[in-house]
Length: 83
Image 1 (cartoon, one colour):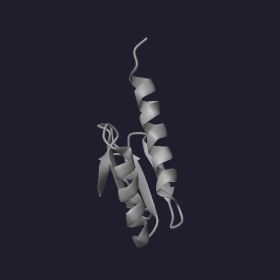
Image 2 (tube, one colour; image 1 turned 45 degrees about the horizontal axis):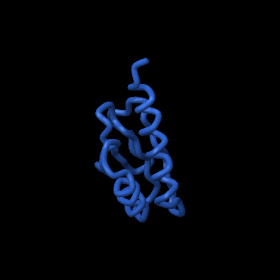
Image 3 (cartoon, rainbow, N blue to C red; image 1 turned 180 degrees about the vertical axis):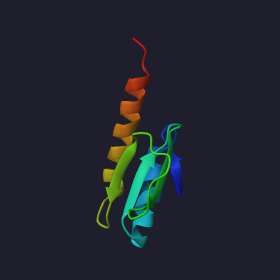
């Protein structure tokens, strides 16, 4: 399922992932275009371009997920800077 995008509101994406944890463990990642996806942890993520955000279990907080999304966006932004 799509949660959002790295260039959009990361808090909303984190909340979307967090709310779906009631269905079980989830793995979240961002594809090459920066779209944030998540699936059940037992399913195989598709289109992962080195952008695994994390695997989350019930008990994870939305702020933990948000921190991971912010870190991924920061790392991608740093990679895009031309010196």
